[in-house]
Image (cartoon, rainbow, N blue to C red; front, side, top):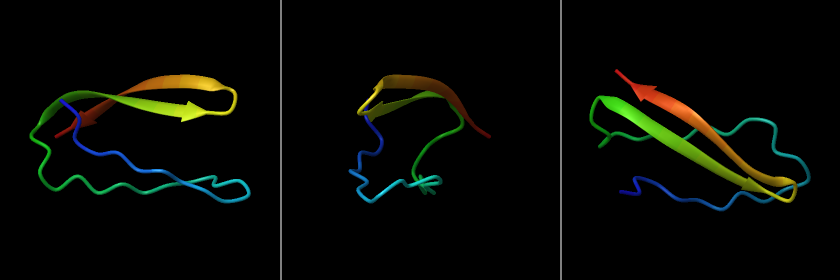
Length: 46
């Protein structure tokens, strides 16, 4: 189930803050697609 999707543009965004007020506590996977490939990280919501 996808909770959030956004497209970020700019010269080189180093940090992005994403608010997920409707996310229930649990383990999620963050998928980041860049020009260099796909990065997948675990995200824990407490």
